[in-house]
Length: 191
Image (cartoon, rainbow, N blue to C red; front, side, top):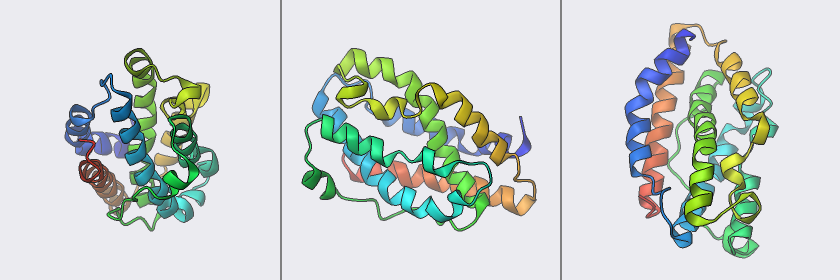
């Protein structure tokens, strides 16, 4: 494992465990699941806009194929929301500062790792809530069969972070991203 990846894992593992323990993905209530997806949309839409410039300029990243907001919108439509209701959803205002490649990679570490986690949650959500890919669960399998490959591509991009100052920025933004996301979910009434 590369040094920056080890540093990221060590610095964020407690934040990751805390958030996982609080997320109600083991619900059997479709309304709770819908609220979770609404809150995710409210975070991902401004978050992806924030990352657009620095992430799209990371060589080899393939930023355009990593956008999750369109899939979240598709899921919300499948869960019964209208375009107008989706457009009216509150959006997260408290986001980390992301201006450099190193900072973008720190932020992406959180959401790309969550995409891996979605693979494990997908069968649980299907069994408990009855939501499948076409009925509101596409986000949980947003990359489909490409998930592992895209994680490896991300790690290859991450491996380009070598300087101590860049590693520190990457780690700090990953921590801030976890904190901002958890705060947003709490504010949204999901946690």
